[in-house]
Image 1 (cartoon, rainbow, N blue to C red):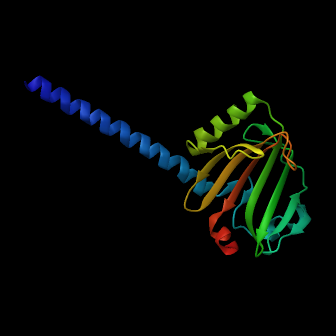
Image 2 (tube, one colour):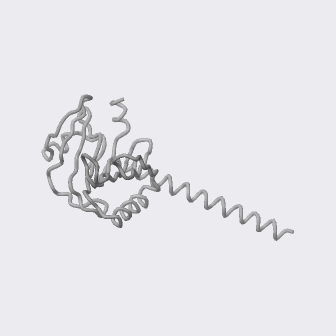
Image 3 (cartoon, one colour):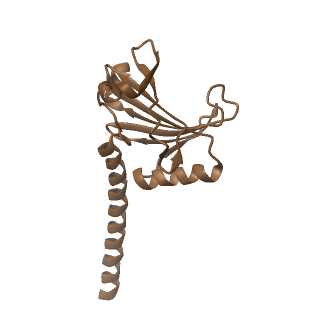
Length: 176
């Protein structure tokens, strides 16, 4: 009878350890997203002045968000993928959104990119919106919203492209 009790205790202890490790790894992945708070050298909430000489003005929306193309050309790869373009958006001269355009990537590469991001930031929420977007892989924390989107080839704007977006949630609140 004692062997059965010991076995039961060990079994419950192992289950607890597994659950704890899974939750801890989830927290660590999302925590690193907040700790990095940006992509490469681009840090959310940083000042426009840090990037000014490397930007080309694109447009401003009705809420005052200013959109720029990053034109320095020094970033050729991110997350192991070729970068087509990088776009930055500012609210009140603070970096609000980073958009990395990977362009057209094949199916195998797409899943490698998702796996790499999953390994780094944890399992994303997958959304299939049934419009011109094939999927959205979404990671969200208290400070950051990041999503990887693949557009259909019938998309009127981003034909067949894959984009990675990262936004500052505190600056996004200013747009509400």
